Image 1: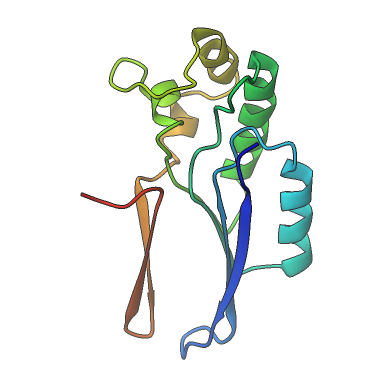
Image 2 (image 1 turned 90 degrees about the vertical axis):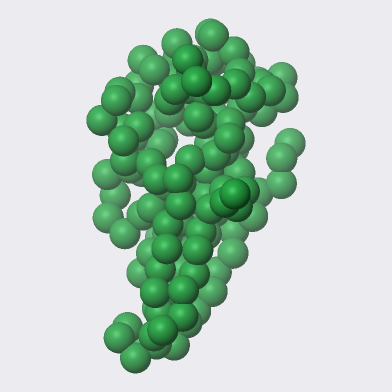
Length: 144
């Protein structure tokens, strides 16, 4: 199972005091989506950033992809959330342009039965936040 990182950071800034950001990366069909949601509810961050790779776990099945897609669809409309593309997500949003290990046409069908083009458009390649003159760049694996 892929490691799941849930990191909290508080930044004291003049515009928004005690702003709390939670960053969640590499869910990969995480069996702990309920725990992640519970942590977000408990911590009540000002912003939650999901840093990609929602899909593909070695040996996973289309039903996991379906459940993760349902979670992602609901998460995309929640306030104060940012969702960034991961390399394992791109083949499902743009199968004609990208490929990643773990991609499977059956998982693609399951994911696309839930997520439509309007959902995919809500994901970002990167997200930049400016805090009191400092910039924080959030990406899945950097920019080149």
